[in-house]
Length: 237
Image (cartoon, rainbow, N blue to C red; front, side, top):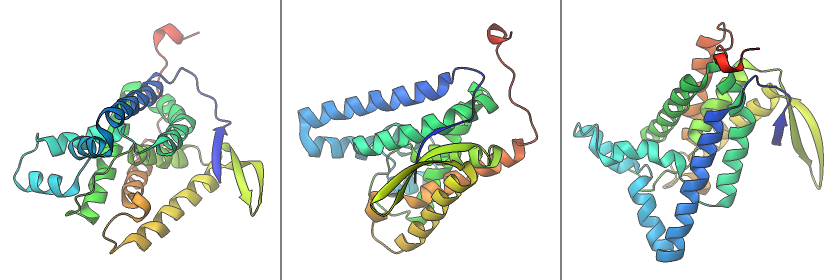
């Protein structure tokens, strides 16, 4: 089941969501430049420096180095991706679900929410494999927090999804509760299956997704009774 768009209108242009998407594309273009000039080894070194390496972060936190490079990498890792499929899949989810959460929370609060969700997601994966030397990259942990918030705030929103039925597929409008609930259950199943493996199964940090999703859902549950943030004066009327 692949979501394509939702039928949940917004009241204002999702500037923060667009900036986050643009930043990820700019970072990916930079990665392609490194790959062209320095090859796979250069790109691996770049990921090792700016991706979240659990073993490095564990050592830094144990030493009380709260502003060290491994700590900063929690944030830089959110803008890096391992390939076109990784990037485009994440950006599709961010665009479909992020604009409504930005509209609900307001731009500044949404940016803080997104980054905090990414931090919680990364730390969840580090807690599962604190000695791993494999860099964690990708916006999916922060996006998972956005999905969790969307599920709580808009469970009945209709999501146009591409549903595969064996060799056939069909476009169906499905409630967000089903689309995102199904996504989360898959993360739980794959996460449990990956326990004990030397690396995240298939290169996917499932527990980052789980941690981010739960964090986003909890924040949204607290804010659920609050109405949408006010429009800026320039957009009123």
